[in-house]
Figure (cartoon, helix red, strand yellow):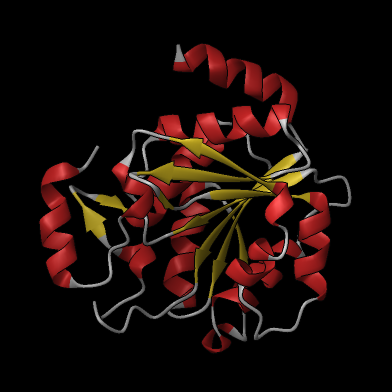
Length: 210
């Protein structure tokens, strides 16, 4: 069933929906850039990149900062585009802006994924993109157990707003200011809430790799 959904998405989304993976942080509490962490020999970056690529997001852009040479090499191995955010210490919003500036003029929407959320199920990406096809002017947010998580999809007008916003802005605030545009979908995927920040998190998640 998912395979047919992906096939339909590939016919409808090519060159219109992009993917951005935010992977610039230094991972202070875990000791390295999280894009380079692995479970069962699979890097976090690969785990996030593959479902984006399989749902025909084009391009898929990895935004790097800390350990940029290593992250760029891993992005290249996967076939992802890479953008270096030289302002990455300013925070995640500056990385999002750096990625959005690389998109084409005809991009209708972008799915924003965080590299420290590698446990998101591939089906969730498909569901988000299916909803965006029906509600292309909305901000698509996944919900699990009553809580919003990641990844999310933003439409073209929000893309432009973010690109012109100050670097110290917060994406959550921009989304809150457009409450009328939010479209929530319930997913059976606890991975949307599970960010990995510490070695204890990594050990705990090792047994639930989907």
